[in-house]
Length: 145
Length: 221
Image (cartoon, rainbow over all chains, first blue to last red; front, side):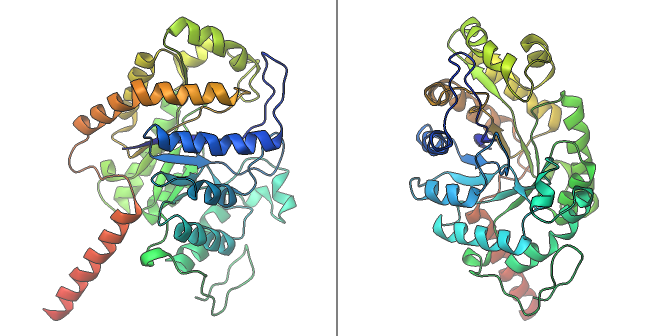
């Protein structure tokens, strides 16, 4: 069994203090949490992908590569990588890079993404969301495999 | 490779760069909150299925995971209970259960995802969220394998709803001391031998080499 942590990367006001962390604080916090995951003996750290507020994690492989450089054992993963709005070729190449840099400590969770406004920003239509999750899989699966 | 389809420009004589490490692509899971087609896709490819397991009662995820397991077997990747399943979950704990409830309540009540809705008590009774002691986290987490079958990966959401970093790191320290060793032992004792280990790069490289050896032996025979 692999046991770990996944983050949705929300930036939320602390209701007990009224303070809202900055993007920079939350980004650095994700690195601190991942290092703690390794320190306490867990197995996996995963982070989500979002392109809208109140979230910060638009580029998971960048974050995970930075974490990979500061850890030795944990698996780096995603929760999720948006197969609907990313170019599947770019996903395949980004994760192959991360796989080499981390000596194989990487896998990924593909997801559709359920935030309607994000789709047109990437030239996509949410109505196609279920089908491309299937269809667009085929290029990266073959390109990587 | 060459490819053409609806959702991107065609590819001609394309080779992704770099090539995957040791000739083995990273393991792929498919994450779903509610879409049966995603369970179907994961089963078709023999990939993993990750249910975020946060918002809804167990019956909801039992349906999705049950469908994935059934279709995984249908497509010939193994028995239903050998499909590769990952689950989410969430907790907030302190040494004393009442302290956990008191400290977490304002975060729960104001959280963007479930705040201003059900009470903390209703939500913890009906969903995988545990707010309490380490023992309560252990007990609830161990119910997951009873509901969804033996599985390969358990991830927890802990750094959300405005919780300060210091608090999150304390949660992890407590988890490492009091929860992790117990879960490891329980999972090791309860997992049947035919249920696969979680996917790792080393395991997938070994499987590739074994299949190449088998193919070589067949061609030489």
